[in-house]
Length: 162
Image (tube, rainbow, N blue to C red; front, side, top):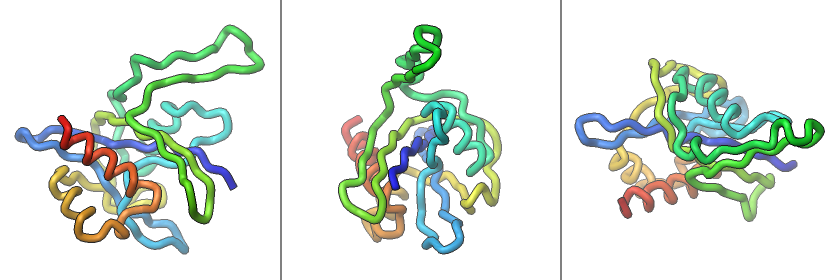
């Protein structure tokens, strides 16, 4: 099985402190790990459309800004039988070992609205500070979803360099 994902690093700054949204996976038969919002794109769905849909389904929030969105181009109108989207994401990942092969992209984004208590196969979406995120990762990286561990480490390294 080969999966393609679009994932969100949802940020806000509150009183000078950066916070992001994390949630708990709530899928039958799977462990309840902390993850970032996002998920599989549907066949021929654009990365941006999938990101907006997944964030809404899982958190109830509306994406209002996506970093890199201004770089997006597509070939719609050139050849109707083959259309492609190209965009600059925050980061990309590929599994290099594991039970399934997966690639995906992370987008930093801003949102509006109120968080749900339960989303689509998720629960407890919440804002946490970057420092809380770093502490949770240092305490036990296995509490995070397999895919998001690398994305979170990548993000924390980026924040350190800012």
